[in-house]
Image 1 (cartoon, rainbow, N blue to C red):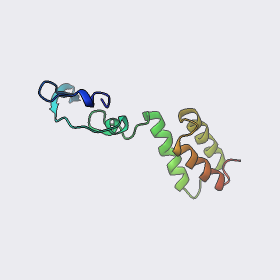
Image 2: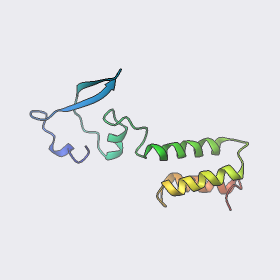
Image 3: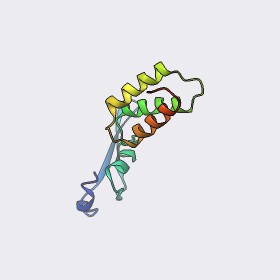
Image 4: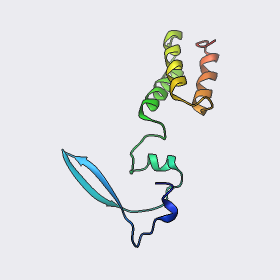
Length: 110
């Protein structure tokens, strides 16, 4: 969708959204406006994603976020989360860097 933005002509193009509502497909014409990058499109009503990450990755990030804010989290569980994050995130992902810093500071990772 982000790649389409420069070519969208509201005089001849339209965006229709298909949703499943109570077991039936509902079609609705949506107003077009530029959203910018792919991440903004993924978070828009076009895709209804919480972030630009895959749902499994979002879940792992949510789990890690909860752990970082918990006072009674243990090292074994932290290592499980660390394994998930390293499997799902790019090596240079900002969230992974933040996780490593906090997990090491709390003594969960060596």
